[in-house]
Length: 364
Image (cartoon, rainbow, N blue to C red):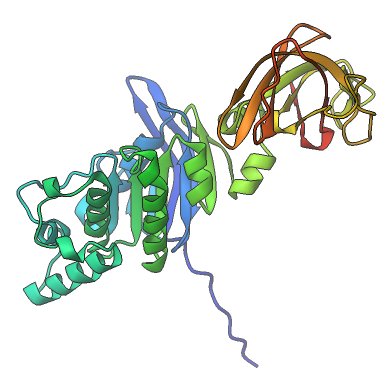
């Protein structure tokens, strides 16, 4: 009897234990990850955390001190063996579009192509149609807008049919009105080409919008990986929460697996008694009393206990309003966001509760 067994396909890109040091300082520290064909992974983190250095090592323009890089299961680089950058079948897109000003749009897109002239022309026309720029095929880069130049850069990067696309802050040079549309068009085209994508960004919104998986990087290490929803709703520490949004923080001490606060008790399972903890929650999870005339909302199992605060400042931000309160219990400032327009006058007293199922408890 025989059984048909399918061996799982190797990841399109795999990096193992990558390390890079400069002047004795470790910039990339034991970074490992895998990306499948058609998957978009965002390497997200603050400036200087090692994101771009990781990208340059994968591209082959920077050499790692240790670690290995594989494409479709084949080694392309370690500290002894190294496939040159031009043979790695890896496309690159950067904030600087890097178009050749003396070449037409068609010649820019065709720059990395090999083969008969007719085949190259057909590939150029195919991609320019996909990015809706076929009418500009004989124009020059200076005759195009920033968004159009970015789409030409995308077409040029895709022209050789790379198996992997590396993107380093590629949309940061575009204004906000253009950015969302260009990002969506770019993502759709990359998915259509079944390209594995590693996107470097310091903008959480961009990562959440584009990524199938987010790898959160800090001080040269990947500290958390997962789907955008999981990374956002199950952060591994206070810094991870704060990277995605504003936060409020309460200090407390654990007794009997409970942390006592002015907003009631918060569960702290597995935390030893006497441990100082920080209870972290986002402004959108603060609830305000609109109905009880300052008497305070009734406590509920989800909301806990109400605490009194005085409005210090309120601002309308477009889709929501941000209200800052000076809290009675310790004089600290607590921020709350409210949908639509809500701009109470400074000095107004309100009662606040915090959704305990939306809070995170971390050791201080």
